[in-house]
Length: 286
Image (cartoon, rainbow, N blue to C red; front, side, top):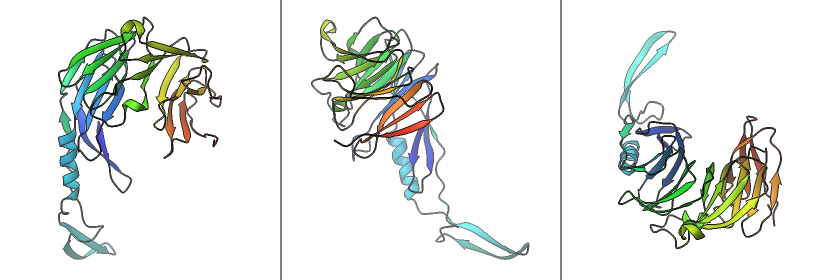
């Protein structure tokens, strides 16, 4: 589902995207500032990646919110008896804008190459997608032609996946270098140059977790800073130019399932785990 937030803190469903035959395991969106373009990608347990274009539906929905409020009848009661009946449209309480029902979208294309569930999908510019899977492969896709252009990876199933912040800047073209991180069930975090030859793509390996790496996230303020979360109950912060984590947060009492950067300046780490807690960690100022 695609949701649009309003200024009053509420959100409305704009459209429903339905095409997968299995659970949706990964999502990514691309929206160039000021362009009105809203592109989505979804990866599924059925092994497929679907590409969606919600631009038109989101635009129509926004226009409906800007339309004049329709008049409604206002009834006022005093001691259970109707006192007066009037038509009003200017009153904030009386005005009512009727939003269109959620539209149903069909995918622009369905990308098929993975033989196992898809675990990650991310845009690298408006025309390129990268997907990862339990089959151990990362596929680079040309969205315009719906064709796979490159494949890297190993034999180890990919449990979590992230692209560097340098490839998420909103640019139309894919960057010259494309750095990815993959997490595995043995606790390893593998770094890759996705655009390199398959035999030369593996760049480095980060070893500190003791088991399943469940989530990865590159910082939006630095292409070298990476978060990793694991079933070993820790969240680690890395400078990928080194081999040891900068920080290790051991504050959950069960598996850590998600982690991301927070704050306007990326000065916080947010993590969630099987202990049913969402924690916000402030980074020390440098």
